[in-house]
Length: 94
Image (cartoon, rainbow, N blue to C red; front, side, top):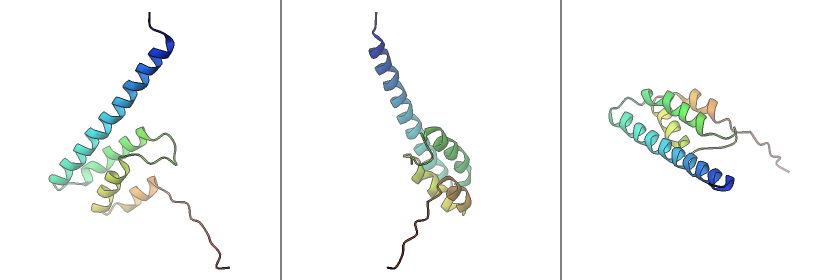
């Protein structure tokens, strides 16, 4: 009979493999929409993948560069900037 620790390790390994698989498929999908010259078709699916992979709003995923590339190519900057809101830092000249 397997111990609880070994089962937890197996489940964590599967989830890591699943994440790697989602990233690989999403990157391949991005390459295909770029090859077909229809980047807008990739914006919504990659946005969903990014949302699923994120653990918090401060966390950037491996898919963020691909998602933002598609947004920029389609001039959909508002979609990309809504997903990544950079905090403005004020500095003084003193």
